[in-house]
Amino acid sequence: MQKTKDKIILASLKLFNEHGLANVRLQQIADHIGISVGNLAYHFKTKEQIVLTVYEEMFSKYEHILQNYLKNPHLLDFDLQVSQFFEFFNDYRFYIADLFTNEHPFPEVQEKWQVLINKLCIQIRKRLDFHVKKGDLIAAEPKVYDNLSQTLLMQILFWIPQQEIMKKVVTASRYKETLWNNIQPYLTTQGKGEFSKISFPEIYD
Amino acid sequence: MQKTKDKIILASLKLFNEHGLANVRLQQIADHIGISVGNLAYHFKTKEQIVLTVYEEMFSKYEHILQNYLKNPHLLDFDLQVSQFFEFFNDYRFYIADLFTNEHPFPEVQEKWQVLINKLCIQIRKRLDFHVKKGDLIAAEPKVYDNLSQTLLMQILFWIPQQEIMKKVVTASRYKETLWNNIQPYLTTQGKGEFSKISFPEIYD
Image (cartoon, rainbow over all chains, first blue to last red; front, side, top):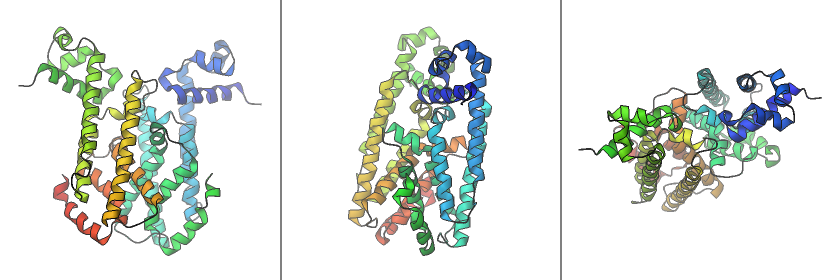
């Protein structure tokens, strides 16, 4: 059975995604799972405690995904990590508003994002180097892959919000397709062979 | 001489960019340009009036940039439009937080953004088709250019905020370089020839 504490965090995340962090009150969270505010306060004394727990879980999941780096030397490895990022950013949709909140109530959260996004950027860059050396990607000036890693990072971070603004459908397959499309021009014959193993639509959804 | 009204709008934009729309008070705006709140109120009775004027100017500038579409049939035409978008998004840095504000005080502003972003998306897609027909870009499946237009749109919209989060330097040249890097793999020999005319760093800054 799900613990009340978990239920509270899950309901809070849902409400944060819908209304934004600043616009959700304890009463709404309690109402959402059908408990009293008193009961809720037994688990979390303040909204701040809930918010910090959500952040903590979020950052820990993100770091976990970062750790899934080159577990195997195939292009599929990146595809799997990208799937995890899709799930992550889809689950934590409030993140985009939060990331750009001016005068953020927890400045350390935005500092943490800065660190984590830079980490991902460096990791993507390394990954591209790895696949160049392995022969999946063509040899090119470092600048070309500097730029490609920036583009991939942007896709990973902002694809879902962009689709949301344009009122377009958000699916894992479209997320990954757009991302791979940026890599495709740089694939070698070997890279194309490996890519063909992961580009089947049935794997995508 | 600059009119007080213009000074108020300029100061407001500066403060909105720094602190976010919701966090700026009339008093701050008045202080910033060294007038009394009474004098300010003579020009704009409420903060809402200032905010709506800023939005109006912003959207009108954006639409003006959209109108600068294929004034000439060269790749340089896109480069010029991209420069204008850089300047625009650099001037209106508050836009990113505003775009993702939950329960926005003016829902029509976010609807307007939806329309304008979709317009730009369609325009970029058309532009790519134009350059394929003209022979600057290689022939490819429509899907390839659907995806490329999404990527270019994302660069135009989110490159500056991404750099800001990562505490990296924001320059027009890097903005344009990243963007053109996405197009480069699709250039034909003719396209490369035309591109070489615009890729000189001295033109960039």
